Length: 147
Image 1 (cartoon, helix red, strand yellow):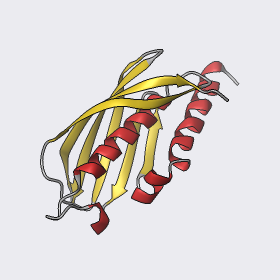
Image 2 (cartoon, rainbow, N blue to C red; image 1 turned 180 degrees about the vertical axis):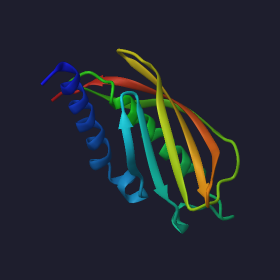
Image 3 (cartoon, rainbow, N blue to C red; image 1 turned 60 degrees about the horizontal axis):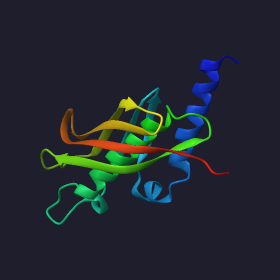
Image 4 (cartoon, rainbow, N blue to C red; image 1 turned 90 degrees about the vertical axis):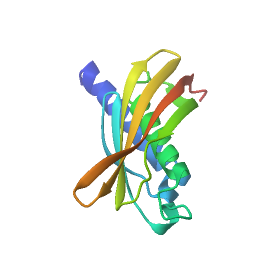
């Protein structure tokens, strides 16, 4: 197996772990759509439980989706023996979200040895229309695994 194939396999394993071992994310219903080096796409079929009191997607749902998708994108680039933890993020809610599902696309802006910065965009899908509803910049610490 080549070094590139080994890195790709390890990255896929880490992304799977990020989703399989996260009970809050599973309970929310967030699903992994695709991943690649420094990138991740997730989806969420919207249900009543994802809405706030006026029928729009709750800001907490959008923030969680943006954060977790960013973490998955960052995890594709961390070295063996490391993982990422969010150290901070900023989210801008650009418009009210109402539709059938959310799609989040995250891409690494800068991967570092100690800190990685990722941009996440959350889109709301209603019929054939896909509208950008929020955008986040997520800073993640690259942490050495102790075990």
